[in-house]
Image (cartoon, rainbow, N blue to C red; front, top):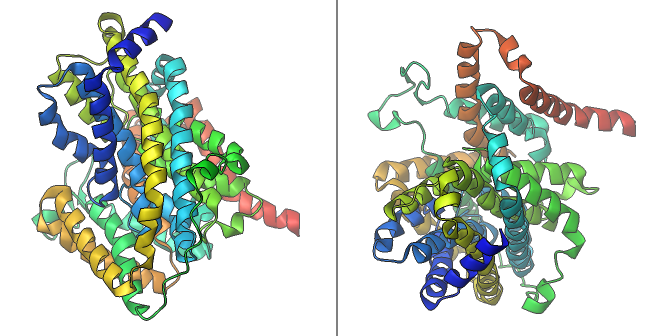
Length: 489
């Protein structure tokens, strides 16, 4: 291993590769900060430009785009409640309230440092345990995926900042929404009153509407409200020690992010949701989550970025992508004449180890750009509300259109913006709805597959040890609020 790392260092520390790495970070920041442009879309758009590049430079650039974009999604989430990436929606739960009370600089600094810590920790896990973790992920079948989705949905009580009943109403609404489209098993149409709904409600436009556009309506409503006074943003030097009070949260969230990222199809959204729920459960001040608790930002960002390395583990070891962005990376490898999987380590060890080295080399550049840019980005919060509202609304529509180059996505964003605003007025947070949109389809499709495999018997699921363990965890999460109340009584 040491020889391969030294070889990768020699091949990576060249002018072309370092330039490609820096370009990847800058492009990743731009892609991640614009709602609608996910890291997978940004990587796909850049793949044609990698044809003439050296294989190492091309792959390192794509990986750094992936890493930087997943962090940068938290910037608009914190500043204007417009998540740049789906997983950054969880960052907005506490990041945006911090911004509204003048602590945008602190939230941004914590987010970049937590992202770096999560990426660094998971990168070490990737180098040490990629093969073993990827093999373990292959043990997940329909029963295990169903149980994982149930565990995620059980966090609805934890994620609710107020009434659990209202949170359940939001969850039920989200679960109803995901039934629109083609049935995952028999291919029949469900609630499809226009051909544009055949693929169901597009997730990204719905997410943009629920969080960002609904916030625009709130801004218009409070147009005369004075912008918050900005507390001084911590200096880059002070930011280095800002994570120390949250060291346990960072380590726990990094482990959760990496493990969830390894599971194909899970991704950063689920990792962030699970990590946030666990952090809230473990906190002595759980009531402050959702109102601007810095630990919520740290938990979300550390897990989100740790999932990047987790998704690379099955890709490099087995050729199985752990996320949509990892699937795009397979295309980048294939274009360069490389086949991901066990043979990649045997025939071209410099490639996977260059990816490892690229992850570590890209981190300080990502952190430097993030910390130096905080004071500039914070200025956004001082702009008058009507100007911000107009700009955010335009970005929302641009991002929705860019997601699929179709005006239908813009209509979905507008509709969900109104729905999100009405729900806000009713005291229902968008978080449970997003939870259902992320996990609902995973739960339904895998439950039905498991029932088919088990001859329509639920006992098939209960014969799987991993599924039983996950379901017991879900039961514990659901019952814990009742038990805690009884203990207090």
